[in-house]
Length: 182
Image (cartoon, rainbow, N blue to C red; front, side, top):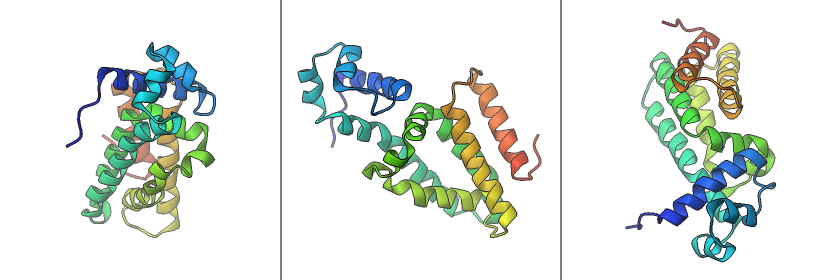
């Protein structure tokens, strides 16, 4: 059974997440992370093999969560998949907004990261659910618009209350998909 992360390890991860989101993965050094985490570089390297190991640990939860959502949606047929796909994806995007920002900032490099190897298939499955399992081009394009629009919005620095952001994203996504909104 894995041991719980130490307070220092968590602090390193939290600071690295913020720095990667602000300056990009390439624009952040181990020294920057150590300074922000208030530890020595040696201490940082005691906890992590390097910057890539930090990134891998930060990107694993969103990748696993998206894969889990895709698995849950797989059990739903047609139109029954649409609303859970919208709310599930938006929930994940909001929860992992800094990680999404990191991925988008250096998209080509990030998509080649081993931790994110599950993303293309999970996104395809999400798009299928958002399209209501329809192969109609209109439904497929709209599904991709929702995925891209939500990801870009949560990765941006729009200053909106979280509940308002969630509500507007869900309603906008449902409208884009041609679904009634409440």
